Amino acid sequence: MQMKTAGVIGGGAWGTALAQVVARAGLSVTLQARETEVVDSIRRDRVNAAFLPGIELDPAIRATTDMADLADCDLVLAVPPAQHLRGTLEAFRPHFRAGTPMILCSKGIERGTLKLMTDVLAETLPEATPAVLSGPSFAGEVARGLPTAVTLAVADADLGEALMARLSPPGFRLYLTDDLIGAEAGGALKNVLAIACGIVEGRQLGRSAHAALITRGFAEMTRLCVALGGRSETVAGLCGLGDLVLTCSSPQSRNMSLGLALGEGQTVEQALAGKRSVAEGYQSAPAVRDLGRKLGLDMPIAYGVASLLAGEATVDQVIGSLLSRPLRAETDG
Image (cartoon, rainbow, N blue to C red; front, side, top):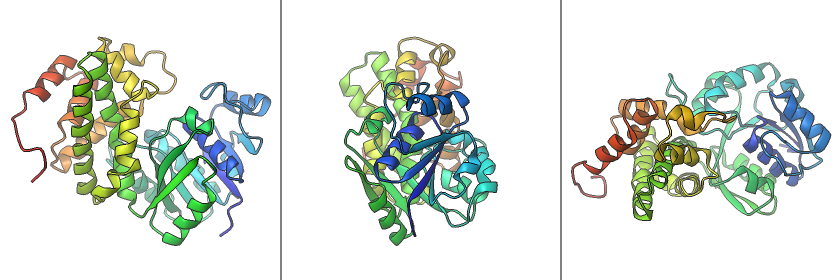
């Protein structure tokens, strides 16, 4: 199939950064944003001043508010917040061509349905060819062209090879897998775990506690992946462990910065006040807890974060609960 044009749905920081990547790869890019101010800013100044200020965008990026402008694109990247993916895809349905590759770049589990993003895509655009893009990547760094490596999950090997070759400009490396569930599981949980790591930093519990939380959080991620039908080696790669390490290690992460504020004593409402982009972990934590319990999984860190965000427990109560758990062998089974 030809790949000369691409559409990106979602004009936030990550959607804009991915539009920049695709343009650098040599494709003509149409970036659809809900906000007219974003479109006006890109058209006028070649900058997304609202969500990615200070970074000049490639001239090959065309901004629009109209999803119909993406109708003839050879492939589409969907980058809305996870909890808005269903509504976004339903709005795009009248303009979608059957068989077009749809690369899902949203991370999370849908609240209420407890569905992965590929499940949402299958229900809203069943004629789409699904792919998942996930891995350690801060939007600002990616948009500036700093070295980045991520996972591209595609079931069809030939399509995967074609996408990998076409969407890998210098400095942006794609590693291929056919395990879409594994690629999604890592992204769904890492944001929740990043909130926990921020709390560790905010409470000044030390680097040892931080390292322990990442490691035990990764064990929870692996349990979730395997229970959903993914492969443990997938989350041991860029889309799981790699993404977890990044988002748990820098206040550039909205999720870690939320946890940092909570650890320093702010309420959830205070920590979220004035934020234009709400941390995905805050949105996904209830769904992660509901899904984990439905599957009968032991995920104490994720459950603790969900309880804290729901106002069911304090920071100190969650920390105390984790530290008082019965001693056990480190590995499952």
